[in-house]
Length: 312
Ligand SMILES: [Cu+2]
Image (tube, rainbow, N blue to C red):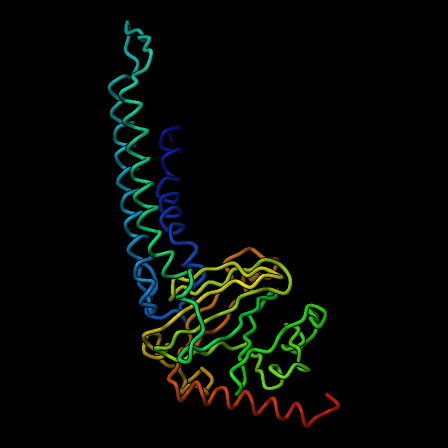
């Protein structure tokens, strides 16, 4: 076998690796059974405000692919046109100021345009007053810990109880001790801490995001949300789903029956946070208002049992 043939053999394998790794961040994060109808592209978006993110993503992708193809074709033409031929000598060129100005200005204008387009999207997703609490919003807290997510809901008083660093016990099997919830505070008495995330559909959900150990990243592929969870810092995130997870992902007899066997959206950690990073996944159920109320009631009933059993 010639050397050229030997070198050519790995090319299909390499092309396959490149093609599959293009969507690696989302592909790895979305196991087949929970992310819903699995197309070859992004998972279905249920967050109307994130449509702008998809538009920007596609615009930047198509632009960079077009530039990439143009550069490689130009390079190939130059390689061929100015290849070595007997008797041909190189020519000394001092440079071309006009040409250099053009290839500096074009990318500058393109980057400025992308920055201008992104600014509106960024403001809508990130800035006040979009993420302000009001009567028809739901507030909750999401806390990352190696290697799971915990969800802190306000109880019937609608107020999130405070968490204290001194109360955090990262070795505890009890979720409320893991996140350091202060039960002695009046706001914290009826609070719920659960390893399951449930939010009502068509409702703005404000999330206070943090971590009790290392940096994690809260990634909701179906909402195009990805935000770092930092120890000692409260990041603000908001979401609003226009469909329930049962409508998008479907139902399964294997799922817990709390939400009529609805399958959940994926929650993944998108920050390499330690040896168990790969298994740091959670379930996000977007449910009807009735199902959401029933979920909180059921969780609160466990809370009462815990209170009766003083020894525990
Ligand atoms: Cu993590």
